[in-house]
Length: 244
Image (cartoon, rainbow, N blue to C red; front, side, top):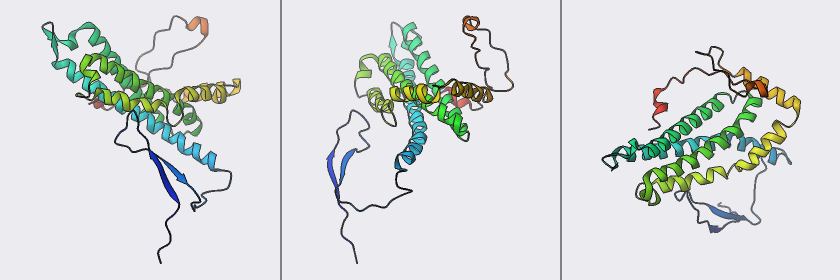
């Protein structure tokens, strides 16, 4: 015998700046039946366990936005001619493309590094918010530079760059806003001297044990006492440098 429908009501469908292919709505659970998962009072703790993994997913979403923006801008700059040459050879455009490439490659490397260290729960707790903030900030920055490279066409929907900018903007908001994550990192994970020493030891453990060449001393090392990390071996996949 079929039971009565549960009391779940769609209040309204939201109109968003981006992510138009993903419907978002408000739901009202008025007198709805539900099943208890876990123990009473542990719901918030379980939610944050889920969100910590989701933050790394959002970080990689930011990498994807940045990679697509860089690919579109590079393709456009390689075929758009101005002043007798393609605009990729103009100094200001070349500078923006280089910044987009560097940010995207750095975000991709950070995301992969954080994913590889997930088995170390303490170190993952430190790296995940750092990765989420950097990769999503990178997405917005690279998309903004992509609009600048395309000029007026970047402001139009024809090439899709404005969609990347709109879709990337929300990554700095959900799964914890970037400002809140930064405050959490400083107050909870780096607040006490003992915790700071612990994170320093943890970060040293993940350095590459066999660097190919030494790093020259930074000018302010003598004043601060800080030593730059040793360089890790290059990543094996050559496709990482293309972002295509």
